[in-house]
Amino acid sequence: MQDPSRLPNLRPKGDNADPEDLPRHRNGITPQMHGRFPDYNVLDETDHWDEVTREVVLDRVENTPGIRFFTAEEAATLKAYCDTITHQHREPRIPVLSFVDEKLLKGQGDGYQYADMPDDGTAWRLVAQGLEYSAQREWRASSFAGAPISTREDIVAVFADGKLQGGPWEQLNVSRVFKLTTKHICQAFYSHPWAWNEIGFGGPAYPRGYAAFGSDHLGDREQWEPIQATP
Image (tube, rainbow, N blue to C red; front, top):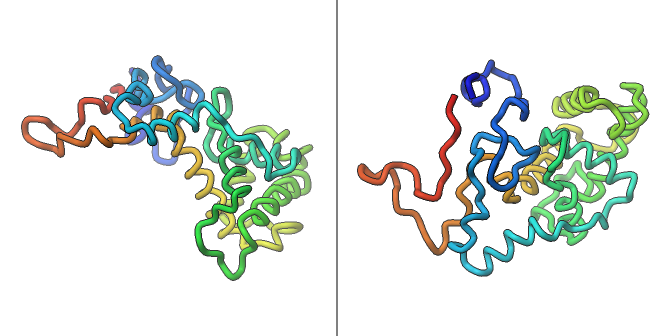
């Protein structure tokens, strides 16, 4: 940890953190086994959680749902899309698409639908078709999933700008569907304990509760919360 650019506020503006430039995780699991809290494992605290919470959280780790909503072809494209958005380019990965698939299979929407958008499941299917269309037509790749990481990132960057066009994209509000899919992706990613390890999230506080609250004698950090690695 000699290079301060490994920390988010000290690297050149706009640069992404390369996991290989971050400390190797030593306790528990993070995506790609690198992070800023190398000795922290939120699952060490499970004895302090209530039974229902413990079962829900551990289920996310131990019982990854199978892909049942998407076809195999759609899943291959969308898994690559989810991994590109979350910058997961090697194992271990949080199986983001599995949780998105489960959400759509159960019809667990957000309680609203924009007038210029199809239902969430249809929107995701059209995104899969659109990514394949753009990868093959515009970037001359064999498929989105089979394209180099740099190509996938370029496609996603244009997607984020709402500028992908042609084919399936003409059936969508491109800017809006990007926000929809990234919202679902972030919900799935950050509900997983491996992501909590990566960002140093202390996990459920019930029934133990909080004590510090920035007090003069206890400080800002709870005793179970991790300390970020320093340069």
